[in-house]
Image (cartoon, rainbow, N blue to C red; front, side):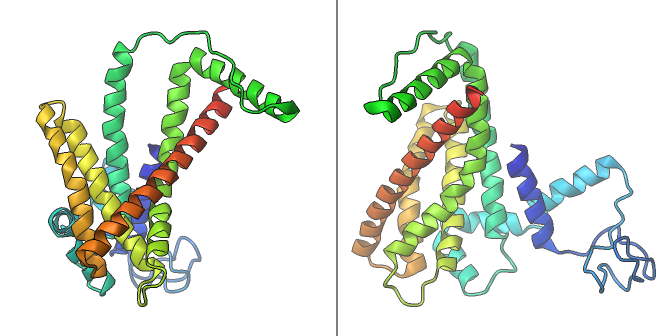
Length: 292
């Protein structure tokens, strides 16, 4: 999860743009261009005038604080994200953005949380998984020379994956984290097609909607996955997923009941097809890397 976490931390630093807590004194030369500093940022090159020569513990604490935005915006955003997502998205689209946590940062934090929870489940599963069979049947894709070559490649890589299941799982997990962000443009693209004839609605609107919607769905998945370890009844909460999407879609775009339900069905079908393609690509990447 290092790549996703690094992206979240970098995004947090870029979006906050707050005054450095450890700024260099006014008049000191800028470390980048040597211009005399007149404030917390260099007016010549724009680099932050922060002094990073401090304890590792303090740097880690400030990074965590920046990521989870302990100034309160994240915690003020979560109630609306869960209970009134349409209001949250519409306020952002209408320009009321300062009180909210940035949507993309919220999305990245949820992605990290989802993979942390999934990782906990994997560690328990591996402890009781039986040793896989070492014999893998031949895979026949197409006839002809090219088809036979592809079939032979798939067969050899499938056998390598069966012989090294831990390595294969690790590769899939790594690439799943990298490809998780593809859900965002995929969702926005499908929404763009569903509202292609709607005036006054732009791709930016679909991206913000997708960030908020996927953040809730990921948060719900994490809660249900953790809660099911305590009680199987927690799984009922997954029913909140379509209900949340209905009210989010209806309120954000000002749709009627029928228009909302129709678009939900089309969004589900499009997302399912996209998910299948992503999973197929993920498996192919895993087979390629495990046989190297």
